[in-house]
Image (tube, rainbow, N blue to C red; front, side):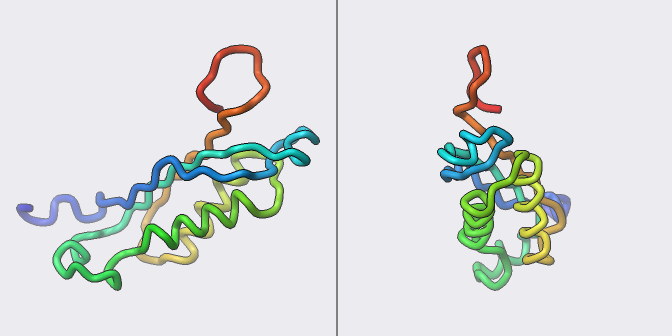
Length: 119
């Protein structure tokens, strides 16, 4: 790569993480639970890791996965916004080298009138 134009624009990408959780405002959601699919983008400078090929210069995907798992399979939240916020906050608190994070929490099996992939 020529120069460092992409520094700060690198990101770790986790897609299609699936868990069973008990989130939602309806009692059935809290009792029966349902599948949630999570997507995470974590921005950080990966140029050193690319040069050194060393785990100490990056963040392990497994560590981010564990955060997502702990939140989604953890205590019930009413809102998906709260689930996403807890994942983002925990990720940023644990890894100071991550400058920004994007979390998408998908609820594929929801009782709405109409055809949807997820909400």
